[in-house]
Structure formats: structure tokens, C-alpha cells
Length: 143
Length: 110
Image 1 (cartoon, rainbow over the protein chains, first blue to last red):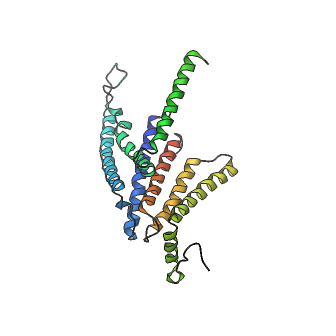
Image 2 (cartoon, one colour):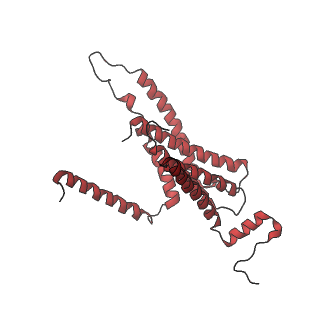
Image 3 (tube, each protein chain N blue to C red):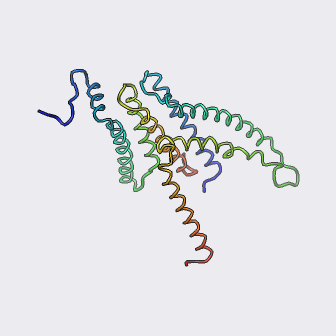
């Protein structure tokens, strides 16, 4: 299991990469007067705007959280800080944005219908079965 | 002599030949893009494995995705080369590769 910092960095980099690659493609189409532009795709275009807005919010939150980290005080005789607010950022703020980033390629490649959904449903069902088997074998040993 | 396909008109330029070929065989553009992706991806991991014994699959996936994006963007300049949905799929492939790449790194990398 990767650490909190590694996971957060990975999520931030994925989101920034998505913004960069979409921004570059839209800029390329604008500069070269291209016939086809991904800005013509309504879903991708709104995703781009939403993600940029979310990242601006994250920027403000990150600054506030950093401020709360350096202003944290530990009472004499106490082993912990008074609240867990300094550690509240990271994944919590990102779940929505990251979910959008992941769902966009999925919807664009596999479609939003349930035609391909049976694949993932079956695969998840298989994983659940394997987990159940592992729990049983850990508890009871090989049947 | 009868041909299987209508021959493109070669007097109006090489881009017209390409567009007329695509009118007859619309899957040519996606096939070219798949070809570019697979050449870079499979060629890269094979060569790296021959040189060092291991291959960085996620890094080659993102390199191959970016190598696919460049011809796709160039195709988008002229009408008739590429459809919007294929362009969007190439962008989606880039994002998927990025997810794989960044989550594949260890704490000491990136």
C-alpha cells in the first residue's frame, strides 16, 4: 500500500496531466484552425471547465491547510494535536475530481450504456468470490 | 480493367488521394493510429527488456499514447481524415495511460 503522500501526488499529477493534455489539444486546434477540435465534444469541454474550477478550489484549500499545519499547537503534556484539521486535505477533497477523471475515459471508450458493464460486473463478482475464499481458507484452512 | 475499389483521383494532390481512400475505407485512420501505438509500445518494451532485462510497461504506454496523439492532432487539421470520436478516444487513452503511469511509480520515483 502506498503512502498518503505518494497517493496524493499521483492523484494530483493525473488531474494536472488531464488538464494539460486537453488544454494542449484545444490550443492546437485553435492555433491551426483545425476542422476537428475536442472542444466540439460537449462532455469533454465541460469536464475541462469543471476540473479547472475544482483545481482552483484545491489550490485555496491547500494553502489554508498548509497554514493550519504550521499554526498547529500541541498542548503541554499532550501527545497529539487538538484536532485533525491539518490532515484533512488530500484524498477527501479529491475523490470527486479524480472520479470524474477516471470516468471520462471509461465513458468515452466503453460508452455509457450497459453493454460492456457485464464485463466489470462479472469481474467484480469474481473478485468478491476470491476474497470470500481467502477469508474462509485463512479461518478454516484448506477445505 | 476493373478494380476492386474506385481508384482515387491522383491529379488533385496527395491529400485528396488520402481523403478519397478514407471515403472508401474509413477505418484507415484508426488503423494507422493503432499501428503507431503498438509499434512504440511493443517496440519500446521489447527493446528495453533486451537491454536491461525488465521493461517499464506504464512508461511505454504513456510514451506510445503521446506518440499516437501527435498524428491524431495533425489528422484533425484537414476535413475527412479523422472523426471527432476517434480523437476523443485518443485523448482518453492518454488519460488512462497517465493514471497507470502515476500510480505505478514507487515512492522513490516520479
